[in-house]
Image 1 (tube, helix red, strand yellow):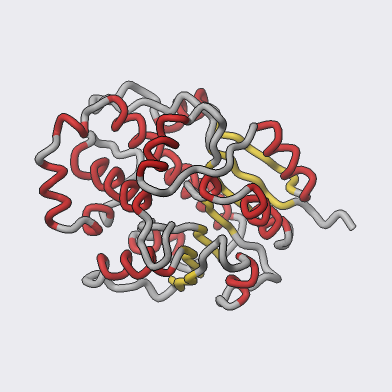
Image 2 (spheres, rainbow, N blue to C red; image 1 turned 180 degrees about the horizontal axis):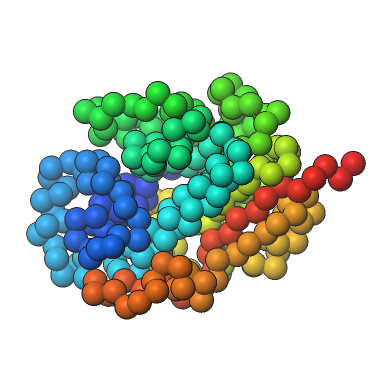
Length: 278
């Protein structure tokens, strides 16, 4: 991502989430009424003019992947809030809209959105007509230029209390060292803290090629076994991978009229920090 340039892939994610709201059938996999509000009028018009592209298998597959990953993270967040967690950190928030449509159960959360300053500024400009929730804080951090821990220490995040972290569509753009720093950061939080994240295995070449064409190449891929081993080493006691079978059972219990299907690969996981081993 170039300096002072909003992420182009984040804009693409935003467009797909808006398409899901505007054109896909109900019930929505992710109910996100804010997503269309993030579109400029010209962008909305351009989407309406391209119904064939919206229905292309490649577009449907990517859209399903994107809404499933957000729904997965929000479902895990709801479980964490029920356990008593009241801090939510969105790493690489992009144009995520959870804070602007938060359900009643999230009202006591302190939400901290972390992203590149340019992307945050563009998002806030697009939402200029929407009130900023009182429990939302923006933390402008360039992951590769600034230590994530250092950047978050300048925010209101309490490192001494459990927190829930989401990291969706981020690790692939980081170096292996920076991606591991995310795991280490969350592992350093108190017991019961949780990280929900997406990752790429080597077979996601089509999506990776499109990201590279947008000037934001994928840098890091993982093997599922390596992810599980590293998280265990760091002290995560519970590690769950969302398999295609489970995704189908939860999010696609019956065939959809819009043609959306559950992703064919495992690319989502959640890990909960275990008790102190010292």
